[in-house]
Every structure is written in C-alpha cells, then in structure tokens.
Length: 149
Image (cartoon, rainbow, N blue to C red; front, side, top):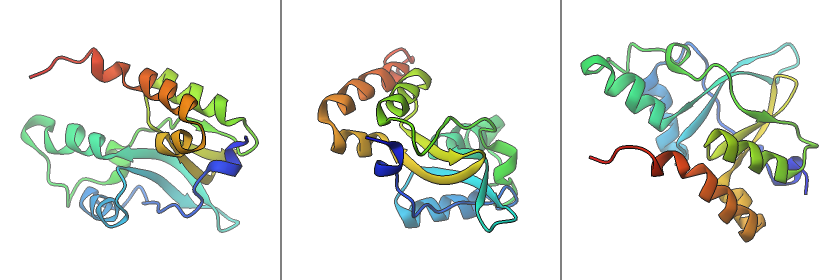
C-alpha cells in the first residue's frame, strides 16, 4: 500500500506567525495533537516549514522557564524545523519504519516540500493490525525509557 492511499488530505495547517494559543485552539477544534506549520507557495499549495505537537507546546511554551505567554509566542519560534516526511508513492511500511525510528506517531506526506497529507499511527493500525502493533511498540520505546514521576 502506498502512502497516498492511506494519508489524510484534509489537513489543517498553521502559519509560523500564528500564536501558540491560536494553534492550540485549532488543535482542540480538530481533535488533533499535531499541526503542520506551512506557508502558501506560488501554486496555492502548502509549503511545509515544520511541525508542532501538543507535547511541543507543553514542553517549549507552558513548562519552559516558568511558562511563556502562548498568545505572544509564535509557532515558528517553537516548531520542529526538520519534519520527518515520506513521499506519496512511498510504501506505507517505509513510513511506519520512519515513525518507529524517530519515535513519532505522525508523519507528513510531501512532494518536495509541499504538504500532501498526514499519516498517523492509528491510520497504519487500521490498515494493518500487525504493522500498527509493531510500529506502536517501537514508537513507545521513548516513553518506556523516560523517568516516571
């Protein structure tokens, strides 16, 4: 199965100049914990600049040095600037391997730097229970080695 067959294409994006508050509001409205940070390109597509997760917001804004004002911090200041990506024609197994290698539960699908969609761990699990379970095991290794409080 190809990534383009599994990816979600109706993806909300934020710009690098939007506030963390506005981004978190969009995440809440869409019931997602992941947001591509994009800018419009000359074709009307979305050029992928980075990604932002709910975890990034907590660690880089809320818990950062006693907390920063999410209405003043811009997405571009705290986004991950080197998003993990796959191509639409890549095999889903390759995308799952990248997710496992980088301990992430979502991956952007892009043609060059133009966002085409997003694949989540749950998308992979729904397509293949076996592949989903293996990817989850590998992705969750990060949490397994983290100190617990």
